[in-house]
Length: 212
Image (cartoon, rainbow, N blue to C red; front, side, top):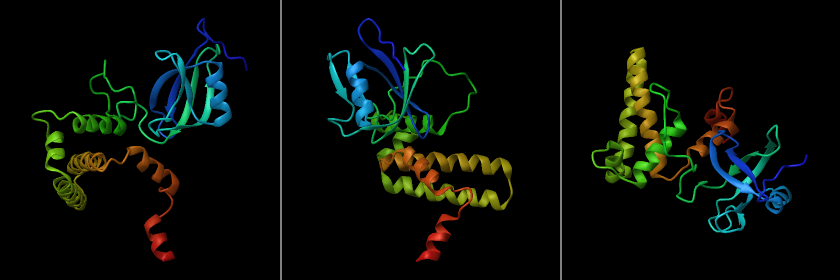
């Protein structure tokens, strides 16, 4: 397939997380960086600002392993699906796309989006923010809240109270994401672990106990 490079010899590349399909960044490749990427299996771009090759992760260690590369119908734009070794953005966020320009009211909030918002509160604390308050109080406070909310979910479930179970489950999930952020565990690690386990059909913990 012949990729069509523009007048500057570049082609735009949308980089997506292989596990979650989250858009990570928009970058550019020239012929050389494209060939290096295909040969080495690691994302290499061309930096327009520095006018040089940019091997993603060379200085930060946040490499991106190429899984697939797809061209659009005009062959003048690419989509790369990758497995990343760390945050995609130089600011330390999972994705470069974090600034909300427009969001339809009532649109469901994804776990990835919520995780990003929680991360922003840790990096940039805000006065009056409950999330910032939790990070300020530290791990012990966060763990206490996870324990409390777990108990509330159990109580609601025992009562078979649908509305209360939904409410308390939302609280528990939120506090779990706060805990992951505090421990600097990317949400993608949880998703990858679930994918490896085939959790729907296997009782992983019980199986492990039986093997010990």
